[in-house]
Image (cartoon, rainbow, N blue to C red):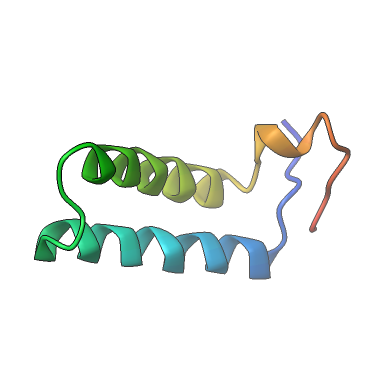
Length: 64
């Protein structure tokens, strides 16, 4: 896996993931939306940690 995410992209994903987590903890998101938001937050944190987004491959996107 060659990294395909730049620093701005990685930081944006972490910020969005943290916002989703805060919304879940404070009760803004609940039920199915909380589950979807939680899964999305985990995916965003994981992809930003490794610097690779598999959804970028089919489209040839590289922000690095």
